[in-house]
Length: 408
Image 1 (cartoon, rainbow, N blue to C red):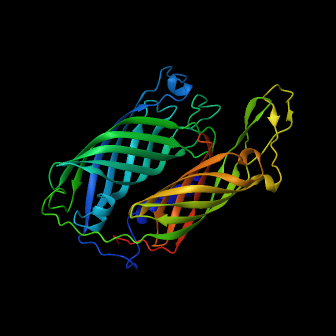
Image 2: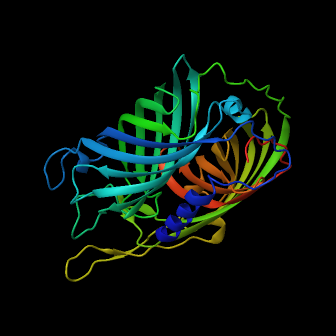
Image 3: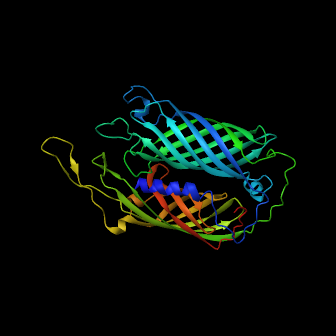
């Protein structure tokens, strides 16, 4: 399944972020062309010691403290005289590839990742700006946990893992063609609870990059840049309908002992969200969230002790269907940028089968525009702010969409 997801994301990297439907209704043409960029970046980082394996319970008998990665990135941004540049704060988007070294190739591996990226400006100074950026993709080349050959590595259970990064940095304009960036970066690797173990790996570090702007003839801060008059935003309601599915692993506690089920469980669901679009960069609303989680409220009642003295064998049971269905209500907020939107939500199940389906849930999702009204949805559901729940991989459609588009 991870291979299918990897192929899906690879297709997204090639077409979704870098191509948009041709002539759109409500589209206002750009006042200038795209500016293409190529960057080389290095990121030395500190590995956050969240697990005994990272603290020294490994074959090297020493703490794993340092990580290092190199990145090659392509991006395109909007002309500084365009509507999009002024509305969204100099946004850029593209793809990147990276190679990581954690200092323990035997037990962790040296993974490579391919990812989508998008960033923009938070504040502008004379020849510099304070920027943000997020990265999201897949990483491969890990040496995962294996009870026989790699028993110490209890943080990574999959050969392919999700890659998530956010960073804040200063962008120094050296000339029309070259920018220098430096800042801080936070990175997380995990498999989305699709395989055990899933403790994940987290780093915090520094970044530095040199960026070449292929077809930019004036520095972005040039006074020659025309300042367009941005049209007033048409505030309105829109409605997102999303269908998603995924798979997950699950564990239970029996006689005070945590037990991992050997099975993989399916998850299916939908979200229907009513959004009030209050500006170019923000929409907020209420969502009705339905889910069928075949791992919800699984249990075990008995075990068999083999005659050879090996570990007991446990049988896991599924409850009736009503104990695996839930309908919830959540508050949602969405940060809107060209081609991508980042969605966060906080909710609770109001109709449910009890047990695992009680309590609060949190949602973090990325929406990737495919046409004016349709999008790919990649999200994650967390329970009670700490317990990993399930991935949300699906598609969505937006009704009554009056959002102006300043790019094509």
